[in-house]
Length: 315
Image 1 (cartoon, one colour):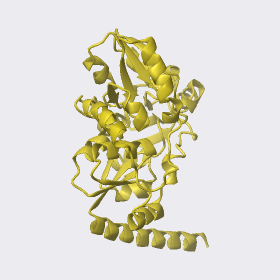
Image 2 (cartoon, rainbow, N blue to C red):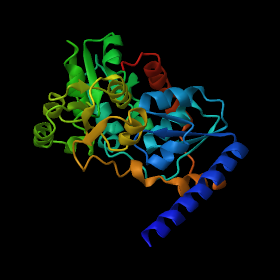
Image 3 (spheres, one colour):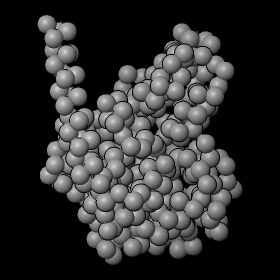
């Protein structure tokens, strides 16, 4: 019975893949997917990447329709960079709790308290927050963004963990917002220590959205793309992975001969996982739900995103 159910599921998935390919051609659409998406979505994506790579691709695509398989702020960024294109998100419930932890009124108040400061917003923020910032960044280029700013005081929103990590590489004063990623922040020192004891030859690769004391244990610290590159090029054969479990798909594709042990079974972003093949097919068929950003907000937010894209990523 289980084998029959699996066969039926695969047949249904194949039908959905064929429908998606047909609709994608009809719509002149491109499918962008984040590394945290389900494996079946990563398999059909035209471009797979982290926040920085996806923003780069969104800014340069000649497709008429962008299907963004990620969370809402990512779709907003794609729309801001392509106001003349249709940007679809398969499930509009795909939000980001970290992005919701910072708001415009609070940011304006902080700016008033520090009038000489420049504002750096992690890309994990809403369009209206981006519109109030000087430059955005991703974990790929955060250190270089801070270096590029001609100011001695920086307001950093919203991730305190990434902000703490970046602050170690600058003498500039950083006023750090108290936000965090619900997924990465769950990982504890005890989780990592137990696995290091169990797998003494494994290297610990960790995303800087994790807690500072966890990040300090890392053999390699970096963005999702950085982690993938490090594991792919490393001579080590065993890794403890401190980031969202969707990365496991690409890790195994890149390095099928290596072993990857995720540091916690709770490293799963429920918002990233709401998308599926049926929702992608449905949104291409109905051309809904679409991402909309008001022109006046988009104009200001676009400037901060374009500044971000001009700063080289560190992989």
